Length: 114
Length: 111
Image (cartoon, rainbow over all chains, first blue to last red; front, side, top):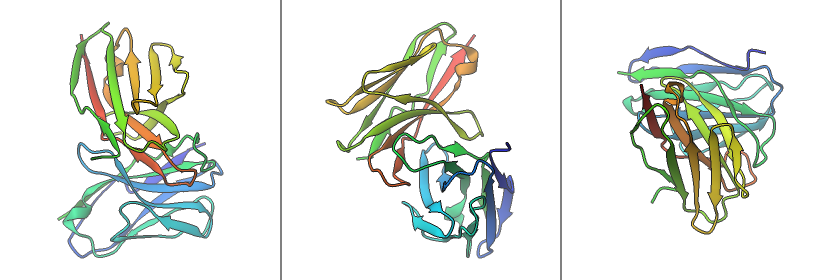
């Protein structure tokens, strides 16, 4: 199993550009998450999904959109990139959403907006 | 006040030392607790869950104090490979997406 994979690893965007961060998992997990991590900070939840076709906002959703058309894929769309979106983005998945569920993280995408 | 607070450190300790980190949480309805480890420029990985009775995994011991609303992580006989950032994670809702991460405590173990 590859686990959770993310592409690209690193990207530089100009202000106002758009891009899609890709995330895929091959563990047949129902729940998937997008987080951002700013330097020296913990992870902030952007969006999450409890299954194909179902998504919901997290703590910091503004400026982002998601879709979940399949169990495996959970892309994150940035529209009109801003310098405040410079961060490391982690995708994660878990089998369920229970209190004791372990989240498995992808390697992250480092995004720089200039 | 942050929902989950950790001493950012850094903690610089020699090999073989014992080191302890605390993490406080503000929501008394918090129901499950975890320690994740994050190596430099890598993704977080689960280190251990924290149970009310306390739990141990080799050199690592995690404890929960619900009355004072904190969890702790004790590392005995520190190794160079223990150098990392340790993230405290608290879940206070049965719905997905309700994990709250602390900002992490950085540990550097030196020879």
